[in-house]
Image 1: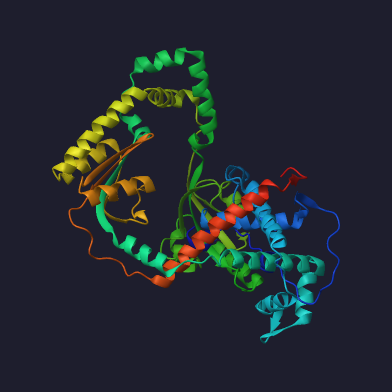
Image 2 (image 1 turned 135 degrees about the horizontal axis):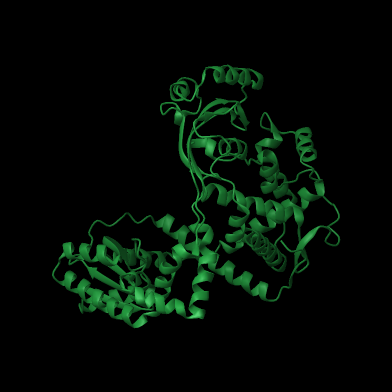
Length: 497
């Protein structure tokens, strides 16, 4: 189902919010943590507690869930694939290294900063004022001790103060003048990138070559190994085509009344009239005018309670009311599409073809050279129709009429390295050429400059450019400093994550 229903419920509410912000106000002068009880790792003398790891791990999960998977919870396989556990530890190690930097630089966390920080958080306020009882109540409700708050806010303030030190990198006005002038050196160009790996698909492989290749036991083992690694993506999962009627309970509606409502609707609904009844009753906006249709979907798209019932329904039948975090549902399964497990015999030839092509380096290089010559000829004759035809045949990347400048390089999808960008501007300055080719490892880039420069220059925002440059430079300095500290700081991990 479209919209919110497809986002599985995983809301941390106040616990997660406080866990990320972690602040303190009333408790000062506590004794520092002795030893490392419950620590999962240690960076120098700084422990990484299990609580810190859990919060960072949840933060990572929440990011991937919302930014990449559209609100859907990650599977254990996806968690492992993206290395989320290791990323959480890595981020915490970097945070501890920044604390060590703060200590070495004599940076402190003033009690006044702690107090001002807590005053800014609305969930500890009543009528705009800090509420001590509310503060203590939220701490107790979430099982967090005053010591935990004090330690966390101290780290937070130390980190912010050290970050401020990094960000104070000076940038001269003359440097900004140069930046403005370099950005004004702007042209439009058509840029093509010929990737040798993508060209492999244009190299012919005969049935006889495939048979000979598979007679070799080592080659056959490579094919089988690659198939095994890809099998999950090659398997065709079971899917269903379904619709539903939703009566919501997720926004404070009275549960008993909503249950009574769905039970009444269930008495009216049949497979034949389901669509018309869904249009009349469903409270899912996305299905209101579509008979409650959810389309065709596989497992993992819906919340578990819904999915369990839907995939066990016989085609052409309607379920009893089903309760989820969104409310009560009636589910109608129109049809089931059987899954199919991938078999080596069905994919052996295509995998062998892929591996054989990967070994035909000489043929691929010859083809790349041929394509380059054809592209250059098309550029020289301004034959864009031919370029399009070549792109369709060989699948190379192409940016048309894309701007680039002396500072940023190409502003399109194809990235030009700084060395290639410098060569282009040197050639333009000396009027040596207006078409440039760069033979790089595994690929060729061709840049055709328009005859006249781009006169429609964007407005140069001096303040924004200066702030951006300061941020880039401060991040580079921070990275360098933390790498240096990290080289001399022992890191120990106590548990396997």
